[in-house]
Image 1 (cartoon, rainbow, N blue to C red):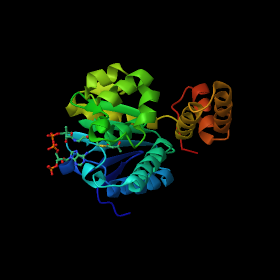
Image 2 (image 1 turned 135 degrees about the vertical axis):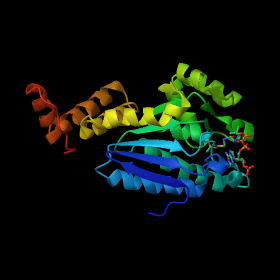
Image 3 (image 1 turned 120 degrees about the horizontal axis):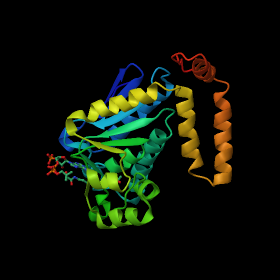
Image 4 (image 1 turned 90 degrees about the vertical axis):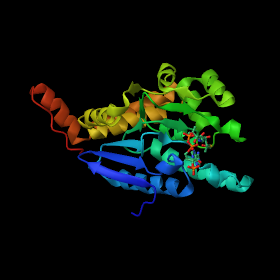
Length: 260
Ligand code: CAA
């Protein structure tokens, strides 16, 4: 796998994916989107990786948006193609068969805020800033912002942020539920690794099925959603880790999950 703008590191059961274009504040051009896609394909197939951390290189930005220099001269057809590329990659990220934690050191604007929202959990540095500045550039959010932001913070707040292009600080992002946690900049990655390690200590198949049930269930009515939950709940009972988890509880000993 040859990557231009993304770094993939694996340690134990946790992988860290770093968007690495710090001179452009990690802006997402087509090459970077393709790199993320290639990394996701690798991670999907890696049974040793239980949790992924996604971050941006440098201390200034997570991702400052889609690459404006690449978008500037697009026509309508090319705009649809660029939006579709980003949306396909972000949907793949959202549906990855393991949880993804966004560790957000700085700017998460436009496509950067959208990238963070496609992750399962967001941890922000106190220095992070969020917003959807697209309307100020003459476009709509194009990598899922019009859809995921209202789902996360509610329709009224999403409309306010998208129409005004306001940039909000980490404490406000926490207050409106856009991020899970705000931490000091110097402990951002430690906090992300600690949460990833805690998640990785639980049964990976069960965690994967929790993600599946939440993601699929949130898109349908409650009657259909509880059927999805029942199916995923049932699938757990064909895993060795379910037997191990419950046997360890009964025997009052530490559990030893094998991702089987
Ligand atoms: N695309 C391309 N290049 C970008 C970029 C972007 N989104 N954001 C920053 N950069 C580049 C700058 O052009 C600059 O490059 P040069 O050094 O070559 O001039 C470099 O990164 C550093 O940026 P600044 O000098 O602007 O840094 P700053 O500290 O003064 O400002 C900032 C930081 C407020 C984040 C500012 O860079 C900014 O406003 N960036 C654009 C944010 C934005 O509008 N994002 C939305 C993009 S549209 C989108 O994402 C569409 C979609 O939904 C798919």
